[in-house]
Structures are given as structure tokens and as C-alpha cells.
Amino acid sequence: MATAHIPAPVDLANAQFLSGVFAPQRTETTVDTLPVTGELPAGLRGSYLRNGPNPRFDPIGSFVYPIDGDGMVHEIGFDDGRVSYRNRFVRTPMVIAEEAAGHAIWSGITDGYTPSAAEAGPLAGTTRELPDINIVRHGGRLMAMAEADQPYLLDPAGLATLARTDCDGAMRVGSTAHPKIDPATGEMVLFNYTLEAPFLTWSTVDADGHATRTPTAVDGLTEPVMIHDMALTTSYIVLFVCPLIFDLEAAMTGGSLLSWRPDDGTRIALIPRDGSPVRWLHTDPFWVWHFANAFDNPDGTGVTVDYVEWTYPGGFADQPTPAASTLTRAVLHPDGTVSRSAVSDNAIDMEFPRVDDRLLTRDHRRIATVAKGPHDRDALDSLWFHDLAAGTEEFWSPGVAIGEPIFIPGVERDHWGAIGTDPTDMRSRFYLLAADDPSSGPVATVDLPIRVPAGLHGAWLPKPVAS
Ligand SMILES: [Fe+2]
Image (cartoon, rainbow, N blue to C red):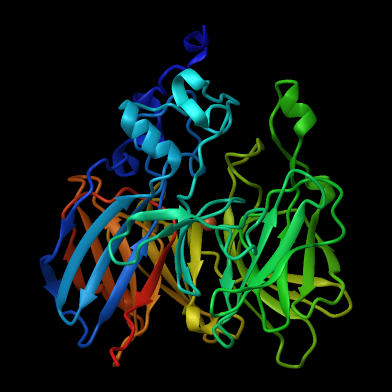
């Protein structure tokens, strides 16, 4: 009987990323006016949006953070002094079917289970779609982004899920959750990896949402690789091909699907945006989840890339020492050499590097990150602010679990915004820090009406100026 094969429930009591500040939020709510402590910046209008894994029902089979889980998008809206909140699940066909059943039908992505027709009807044999990583607005589309898959369109006026999209064909084979938008042209550039040849493609979408390059092979790969993020300059797409390889043969014989092969080193693809041949560079083995930004060097030779460099992908590879990360600058020289240097050695396990998105593809002075410490070296409880021109860094440590900082351009003053949850009382707040003095703490704090689970990536969407 098919039911004999339905996976057992995940042991919630021992699942770190399903409990505490990570516990899923099952309530959807809309609140028009929220209490604010401090003073909101004059004229602040727009929405802070954030996505993250949030399983609709208690998972069965397996749950691998941060890949598994359904998406939930949270919106904190600012309108000249009034702050509102809403949150909605990203309703994929799997979420809709599970809501009808009242329990989980699909398991995690690593255990290979797919439901039968008895459980899933016409969706039998499918795997769970995971548009739970990022939220991107471009070309008239608001998209909940997945890893190497097509995103879901959301209604910007209420966050209702509309439909899966291939972005006019640019995402025909899928997309990274981290496409980049060139602020100078409005063009969106993306890549996608696949398990079949050619393994890696790139595409472009113009500012109006039309595909201007459908998936185009990146020549040079002979096996499938996992690549999470990308960087973009005026001239190049920069892809770091770290040695995390999909090993399908091992997976079919009960081994790990992903294989860490440091002997391969890291390969860097410089893909000219004009379609010229790809250039490959080689350097030491390391792992990258996220880039801060990249830019063409001012003298016209090479590219500079800022990113968080991990010793290896912790959770996806076994090594004798814990994985460690460093905010790093790599200069890619025209002779093919790669120079790498640490930008910070104070923060621990930093991640989520962000810049002012208006500076993407161009030189930036400041990067914000999340990191552990300096007070609690086990919790991501500090925001760090790195000034690359001055060679200095400062931090703000609220003693709560804090999420990705997003740059919010202001009328008179710029800010960083982030959601945090106090693990002692599970209250969530939105913190607004002045970009020119972040370590002094928030200029305004918004009490959120429900707990927002620790999540992944967000975006600031300025409201269109009324004509
Ligand atoms: Fe990411």
C-alpha cells in the first residue's frame, strides 16, 4: 500500500531550525497601525519585504535548513508616519493541496520521497516547490524566489500568490534566488544551474520585464555544481564556481548528493555581458553563499568582488573543524591572477552582506552584515557595518536574533532596516538604524504584531511617487 511509504513526522523537539526563533509562523494577519518607539524619518514611504522558510504544516521525512520549507513573505509598510504589517504564505500547488488535506503531503527534498496519487492527486510524483529564499521586484513583477527554480508572482497589493512565472522565458529552466538588477539600466541579470548539461546558463530581462537573452550556456563545466549567488559589474557577470559538486551516482547508491571536492579549487567565470566568450580564472578552494557587490576596476583592468568567504559549506560537507567565514575582497586581475584579502576579522560567522542597492555594479564604500558576537559568540545577534574606505567597522548588538540588514534610502537621511526576535519572550521588532551612525542603535523600533521567524532575504520597495 502506498500509505506504508509515507515518511514519519520530523522530530520537532530535536529540530533546531523548526524551534525557538526559527519556529514556523502559521498565522496570517494584517494590522494597519503598529506602535513605534522613537521617531520615524520624515517622508519615509515604502515597504520592507522579507521571505524565509516557513513550513505550512509540521514536516514529514526530512527538513534541511535553509532549503526546505514553504515561503512566507512579511511586509512592513511605511506611509508618512503610519506603519502597517501583513504576512502571507506563498501558496504553491503543494501548499494548497496540503491545506485541503490539513497536513503535510510532501517531504523534505533530500529523502527522495514523492507522494502517490492517493495522497497528491494530479500532483503525484512531484517534489515540493520552494519559493522561500528571496523577494525581488523587477519589470512589473513581484517574485518570491526559489533556488534553481521558477519563482512565484505575488500581488503587490496584498501578497496573494498569483502564478508561477518564467519571466518571459528568461527563467525557462529556472533561476537563482539572487538575480541582480543593474541600477544604471534597469536590466535584471540571472543565472541558473541544472543537473544536466550544459549545467549553467545566464539570461537577461530588460527594465520593462521582457526577456532580452533567454538561457545561454556558460561554456566550460563538465559536471553539475551548486552556486547560490552571483555578482554583477557594468561589464561582467561574476560566478564563483566553488567545488561543491552534485554527485548523482553517489546519491543513487545511498551516498550524499553533494560532494565537497577542495582539490578542484574554486573556478571563477567572468561572463562578458556583451555575449563575448567566458573567461575562467582559478584560485584556492572556498565556499560562498553571498556576494555584497562587484565592480569593474577604475583603471579598466579587472574586477573587484566583495563577498563572504567560508572555509567550506558547513552543513553540506564534513570537515574536522567548524566552517568559518570572513568578509573578503577579491581582485580579479587581467592576467588571470586572483588576489584575496580579508575585509574584517572581528565578526564571527558573518553572513547576509548588503550594500545600498543603488550602487550595485559600481564601487561602494559601505557593507552591512549579520554576525555572531561580540557578546554571544553562539548567536547571530549583531549587525556589523564595514567602511571599506576608512578601513573601520562598527557594530550594534541588540541581544536578539537579528536578520539581514536592508539599505533604505531616505529623504534627509539613509537607514538600515532589519527584523529581530528576542529569544527570551519571542517578540519580534523591526529596527531602523541611521546609516551614518548605526552603532548608536535604532532611531525607531516597530513592535510587530506576531513573531516573525528568523528568515532569509528581503528588499526595500520605495513607493512610486504619486504623479
Ligand atoms: Fe541567499
